[in-house]
Image (cartoon, rainbow, N blue to C red; front, side):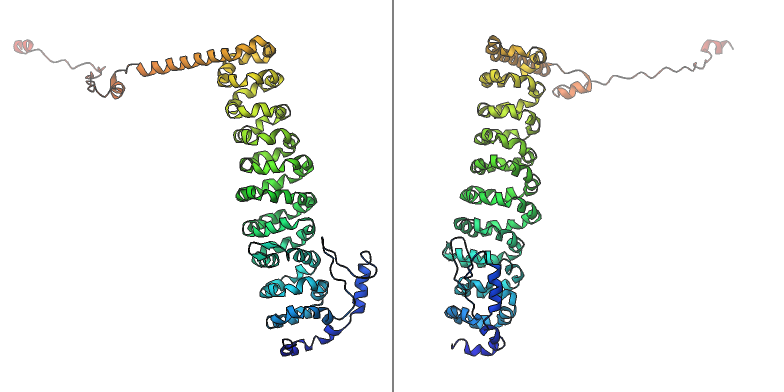
Length: 454
């Protein structure tokens, strides 16, 4: 009482409201919640049943929490007109006094910032108070879960506020352990939330499904968080194809842990993968165990290989170990892919010894494949293929070496260009150039004897 008396003048105007027994208000509230209870008004949390509320005055409902309020009266007094003068605010949080008031000391330092967003909190009071009640027994770092929850909102309020109505619908589905991890990693995660704002409506469409994967994803958070900046760089392309992914999400969901483990390989290829996600997801069971073997070398060839995915995917286990050596030759193989696909079961056992000679084989024997590809099923031909490839490869290399040798030993030609190629010699003597003959006849002059006779 000693703590309240000095501020009695502040409460004087609100005494009628504080002491009024709002039976009519509670009757109306009972009617709205009649489906939940016919005798008392209950508020349900995930694992918590809140105090039963009986019609009574606001002051009588606050009285049990006086010991929590009294030490902070000096700080609360400036906000009393707003707290008690806003009937919507009082009505929204009145059923949750048992959750809120014991932690008023955590709220008071940030009361101004919190009240600035009361228009967001009022319609979402119940899920937010349920969240606060769940966090009260959690420890995040060295602080209580309630304190971290409040401080996180204040620090990132401009980013979080637009998502509060959206996420409030799903808070009850997210385990406490997951919420604690998110709050612990708030400095890393929350700044990226604003990048999701342009895609909020798209996320809302699929949130019922996505929220079921939040806990498995958080279990792999140590793998995810180093990749978050790179992942968010591709958020636009991910969202552009989210509908196609979600159509076949049931096929993808069992492989999400493996996908997370390979994020460092997957993320750089998202611009190439996402447009084909709906075509690739049905083959996830084949690809996922070998992502680190095939993706680093498929970057430049994914588009060309897409028509053959239904045939290639079941053979991923056999092909993946050779991807690094095989894919550099894919441009030479593509014109004959239809023929290779037909005889893939025969070719795969010899692929390791054939790859080094693919270019030579295609160069010399490619014309046969279009019309005689049935030869690939002949055991003698297949057994001879590696040896034939080696012979053709050696022939090509010998021819190339001879060409280089001839070019290197060819003598330099004469003239200026030859001198520049062989600077040890003296420059060639410049040959005199004869003047061109004139077509004008020379002027005749009298001989000396004729001059003498004259």
